[in-house]
Image 1 (cartoon, helix red, strand yellow):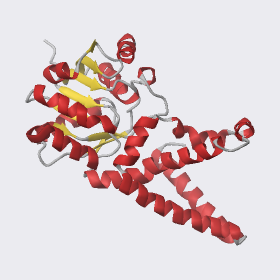
Image 2 (image 1 turned 60 degrees about the horizontal axis):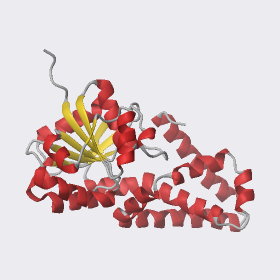
Image 3 (image 1 turned 120 degrees about the vertical axis):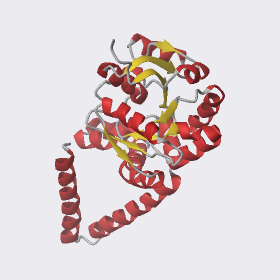
Image 4 (image 1 turned 180 degrees about the vertical axis):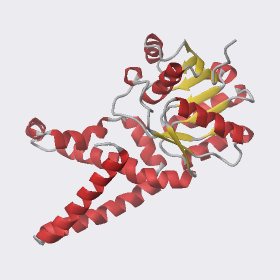
Length: 294
């Protein structure tokens, strides 16, 4: 007799790129038995079922009663209501995690919503994504070679941590452990602020009087810099508000760097401008080489 799968029943709340890709990856590796899909839009859930991301459509109550692992892949602003709805029906052995891009606020929300059941919640954040959304965006290989950060709580058991680590490793991910505050500070710099700046720039171009002409002439540099601005406004609004202090702090640092570069340009200081650009170029090349990205 074959051993039971690592996750006999998985419930994904929010079956889009992140949640759908997790389901597909676990299905591909044989690590999951049945996948329940939970969400706000029945049409989207039916599409996820057609695509094979989920096996059944379920309510939050059904997910809490049946699932061995529940993963919240919803906008951060929706997590409080979801966790509160799960709590009355939650089995004692069910593990809950999330895929939220901030962790301090999420942990606070989880503590308030789950109360004494907080030990069942292990916060997480897969560092993977794209500007595409919806069930059609899901890919079984999304997490291969990607980092997934877990920010375990002191109430979490070693078994709970190890179960969740094993789940993500089955998806091909590298799992890192970090405290929530450090996570939020680092991700503000390398994820949240880049999206903020890309969106601000895209808004400025789109609002210009000759935006049609600008878009007609835009090339690959414009495409690469603005790609992430196409992400979900609801998701990113919640991320910015949830990680507000860290984002504001990093924006201040960016403004200082911008002032430095702008001053060199105003002064026509070619050497200072060259040194600024060269340092940035070398840092980008080193990062790309080390990470295997281009």
